Image 1 (spheres, helix red, strand yellow):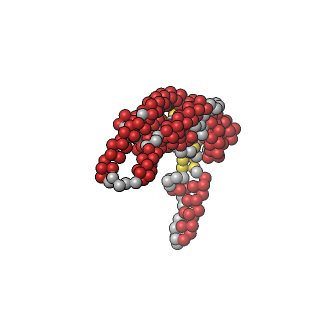
Image 2: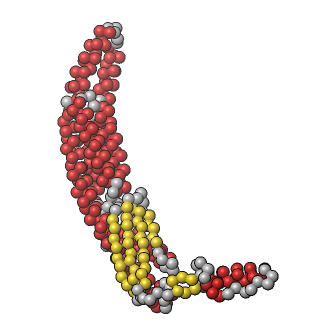
Image 3: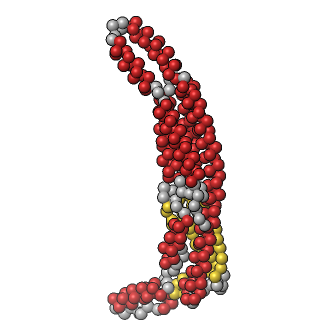
Amino acid sequence: MSTKNILASMTGFSRSQGQSGATAWVWELRSVNGRGLDIKLRLPNGLDALETHLRDHAAQTLKRGNVSGTLTFKREAASGLTADPVALERVKTLAIELADSIPGALPPRAEALLALPGVMRNLGPQDEPEEDQTALRTAITIGFEAAIADLAAARAFEGEKLGRIIQTVLAEITTLHGAATLEAAAQPALHAARLRAQLAELLTAAPALPEDRLAQEIALLATKSDVREELDRLAAHIQAATALLTEGAAIGRKLDFLMQEFNREANTLCSKSVSLPLTAIGLNLKAAIEQLREQVQNLE
């Protein structure tokens, strides 16, 4: 399944199952948010050699997220016991060495050795003929690939819903940006009136203050209250976010970084505002941007 131009979430679940010979198997895959791609698989004994191939296949489809996969077996044929040859050889060697070191000690008895913990185990797939084991490994691999495809589809389904939410919030931010632009247009006149009032008080308190110093202070205050650059940059960020949504695929990191820039402009807008309506718009912008950031952090 290609992920090109598909907006995907990092959360999802999938399950696949099947049977090969006497062994029924079940794959369960879960995916949650993550900074990068982290794949952890739990495989029964004897199948560790498959892990590298399975992880590589998952990485071809998924780009971000913490993915955990569990494979479980169920033996439908009559169960039985067998001795673990490695464990049996180890305890036999130790028992013989111990008996030799004790004068008059009897040699270890077979039934005593077999009764020791870990020596006997249930029959498993690894005890089947080689051709049956090969068929099982093939079935397990195919089942994993199917589970990965289903997981990618589940993440894409969630991503589609996230995309709609993000577009709605982005439209709200666009509307607030327009309102801020209109309100900011009146800010110079409002600021000038405030400056004139402050200037009258200043001249009353210090009539000998040089005119050039007054002009410098007025220019400095006017510059500090100018929010046009912040609004222009915010407009550029909105365009960039819209373009990324159109691009699709694994854009979560890029959008998450862009959210920091959104926040920076909204914070500066609020700090420079000299009118209550513009401050209110700025606060609404910050709330919408935070809502957008929470959704963006779920994207692949």
